[in-house]
Length: 275
Image (tube, rainbow, N blue to C red; front, top):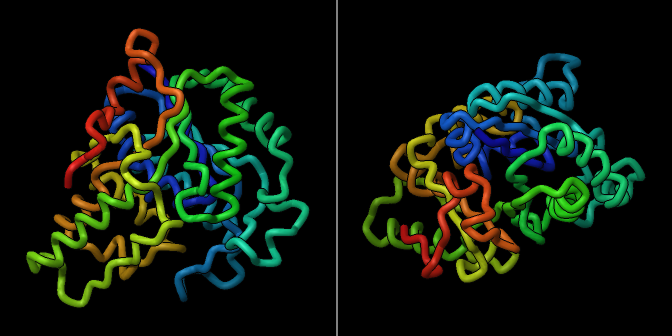
């Protein structure tokens, strides 16, 4: 069996982007490890969810362990940086924020964990962090360098398949399948995800959407029952969240690729995943 380490910026990022992949890996007997750069101190808590005096960073840390249990992760670690906030906010400039971390230093922190785990696959984000958040972009930079330092065989950059999302939402809207009153997010902006032509692999996680939803619910301080993802009807949730997309570059040859990678990641050979 193999090991997959999944590196994320904030608690709950693992739920949205990779929980299906990780749950599928754990179910197949692989070791799953979660690493977070920050504890999400600047997240906006769901109104009324925190007890009097409860610190958001401590709550979100605890939620990571509940999420890990939902998807079968064996280890959770934090690199110790603080949330940088959205791009352009004054919090980007805080000296202890992840966005301000020196890539080499942060990569060496992550490499300590990678050296211990000797993963077959490391997941990070694409070069725009999915949607331009500074901490997500930094995960890409730090993760790639740490993978070099620790000689990780495969780095899979988690991303959002913009074209696939547009096709799916448009198709359901035309057929009248979108729930009444459900307003889908804007997914066709150039800064959102990547075009399908740049995506190399997908992971079929349809059998693990329940685990993915449970992982999301574990982050109750950020995702209440009325959150647009959790409010999706089950068929729509499965359609939108049951396939996870990655950019793998360079891609290992089949002869050299780890079994874990071959088991989970399907090449998008014709450049389309379908809907």
